Length: 358
Image (tube, rainbow, N blue to C red; front, side, top):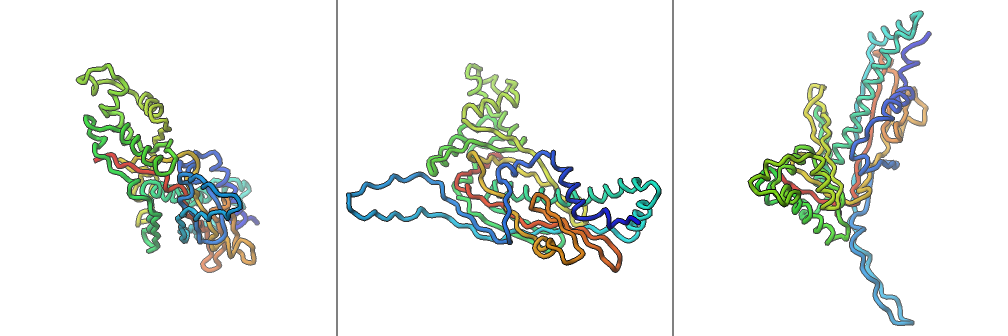
């Protein structure tokens, strides 16, 4: 006789979720902070490794080499944040599914099984959303704060982003008559390049900030130098035109990123919406990876994956653990999704943030 225990298993769920998410559009942060895996929950990395090169000193023949001190590196050490939530299939639901599974046409139970799998996929999607919240918060200020809504769990991290790399512009972009976005971005590009020898070539903002950039009269005058001042604000310019002009003028790739996610509310339902790139934040960064999204070992992976219990554990992308087990009293099927993760920020010294709105 088929039972729910034959279908609701960690391997089956992991295979389903992996297939369902294989064609999903990745978060921006996944391309900036690619995933890496390590054993355990502690993490460390070096920052400040890529400053200006220092020319080697001349030497006399037959003389001992002059000892050069190793360039000062900053070292970050911390413990990864731990995330875990569970879902339960109660006794009544389990018995109803078992009856359907043993119906002459057992396929009628499959849509219900799929709904169960989809519920677990929401938890896995929640892990990915939380990772993006952490990456984008880190990118915009060098800090991360994570707080549970109903369990008292909290984590706070400060990566020590240089204060001069977070600048509030004088002429705000929401005042089109005086704003000067091209100059604001160029000045910060110059500052980072002077300090590190690496010029930011990417710029990230959300659509609200980009729309304020489009209204800038100084930007329009640069684009249309022959138009009289009285007509500047009346010129119709498209987003594509502005994006192309900014990219060509500043030798920068402009990314408009307005994706949002939601946090869990205290009632267990959808809570506050999180705008991943906040209004008024303009992030400048160089090419390539600027850090990594590190995943550690969850307790379920560490203690249960090898077997020896009735729990089943499977990993998705070698990062998120799905665990299923049977509760004998009361009879239930429990599904747990857990992850240990934190982004590193090796290129923090090459990243800058402009605060451009009032």
